[in-house]
Length: 47
Image 1 (cartoon, rainbow, N blue to C red):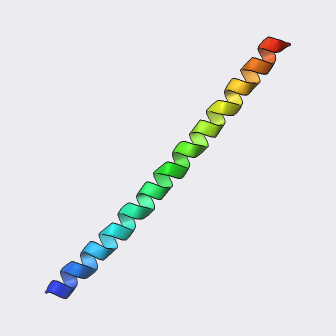
Image 2 (tube, rainbow, N blue to C red):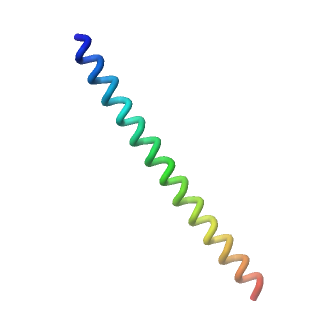
């Protein structure tokens, strides 16, 4: 019984870790997209 609980908690930790990494990479992607958008608008304003 305890072994099952330990395996379950281990799996849950892995899943949470993957989700955290995924959300961080998604946030980074959104930030870089926003940055390129801002750079493009700045460039358009310069011209």
